[in-house]
Length: 362
Image (cartoon, rainbow, N blue to C red; front, side, top):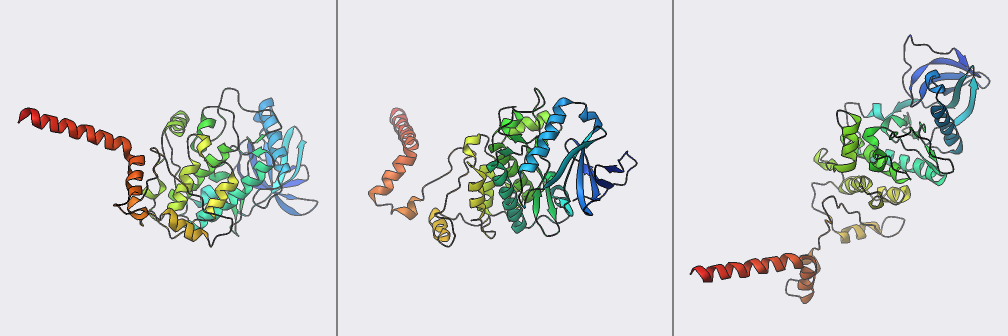
């Protein structure tokens, strides 16, 4: 998980059936400790709601919801919970200890993540979210620090501190968008009602950061960052990292659509597209046509190829007329008129005006 902190801050010696060994770090609503479960002699992580937050009914409810959310989820890519309890006025829950580091720390290493690792980690996070969404749980705070990676490169999603369980009423800070600004979806930044699309957007930011080592939107304060999430378009990852596979870039950009209706409809479809990424297909190479993708897709399980488009500045799909039809064919000019009719009309008007100008002054 994380290295044990050496600090003089207060730390309980025991809580419940757990002997505290050291502090692992701080979660969304309290400290996380490395501990040993005395009855089973196993190492666990214990999250304790801070006394200050424990006096807030709102935070207490959110802490309870986190425990409930994790208890609903039993998946290899999600940290498991073992026990939830309260002792001496301190709420706590014991969960699986992950011997490794979080993705945020891994991104600070000198070498950038290999493209194969970016795809692998993205798929594992997708599987975790697919399972959670199927259990009616939205995480709402997907970020690198909440992805733990063990020594076998297994990713586990953690910290469901602001998770929403569909069956429950919303529990949020009244009038405040709850989450981490750099990883908030536009609708989350605006305080709208959230659905699974918010996790897809946040995952898109995490994938972007795995490629470029920085999130697409940063700023000097949370308000500035939230504004960018709502109004600004991301710089394509390939402008920062040249070996970014074209298809992977399109997946990331589709996940980052401002309008949630233009994103992936589900994590399942995102995961399916990740399965089709060729790590050798870089942006710097000539554009691969739709026909080429279809030929490649015959070797892939799961049905026909789905085209991923990037419409950051409108629809960028253009017909390749010279390949589809010869220039002398009637269909070629039909397609030209269909896609460029307005431009042709404007060119015609300008031509007539130019001819009239020549006639008038000569």
